[in-house]
Image 1 (tube, one colour):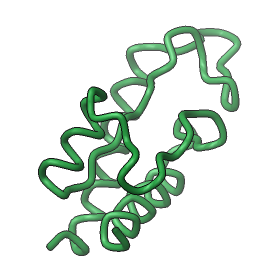
Image 2 (cartoon, one colour):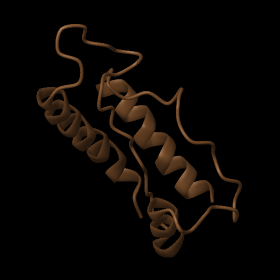
Image 3 (cartoon, helix red, strand yellow):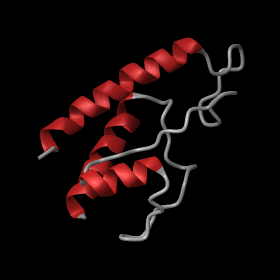
Length: 97
């Protein structure tokens, strides 16, 4: 669906813009339309409600592309990433029907 693809791209680009903590180089492959595994929550939510649903995997050791050799991944980085994620959601909202 072009609408959902546009929402996903808008959200992803906004998150890439506001934080170095997000990357899309490593991750799960894209499902072909109509072929998603609906036992995965984000796939089920997106399919059932025809809405943007996105899984963001959090690092528990450190971020491969943006490491912090002193602290690794930390609660403070998680808090900032949450803040930045809200900014990306806000940037996406004008496109939501």
